[in-house]
Image (cartoon, rainbow, N blue to C red; front, side):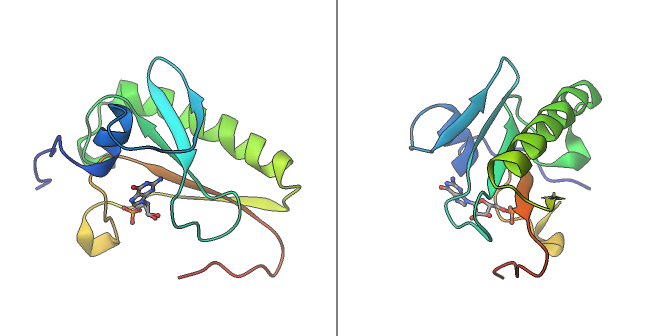
Length: 118
Ligand code: 5GP
């Protein structure tokens, strides 16, 4: 079972403007900003404004809008970095690698042979 949403998580603080972030995009439902510890140049995160711990408890309507933003920013990142492809990733719960408990998608432009930092 998915644990409850914790409103004091770091991305909730970014949403409230309580901590800074390099914001790239905002609409009524989502924001995107640079990852503070990028795994490769151009690593950005897309999050909904609505509170969801992760994909497992997200409202399908929120998810539907969010994935469209992910697509838009994946295309923009690919173009901006002249990349061969785009890595899109999303983790649910600590066992699967989630460390910040507000739903987010990682978007990372990728080039052939370029390693991801661990
Ligand atoms: P997760 O492992 O939960 O999928 O990834 C969380 C991501 O959030 C990590 O890539 C990490 O570098 C990033 N992150 C953690 N704290 C902050 C922060 O304060 N600001 C930003 N911009 N990114 C953060």
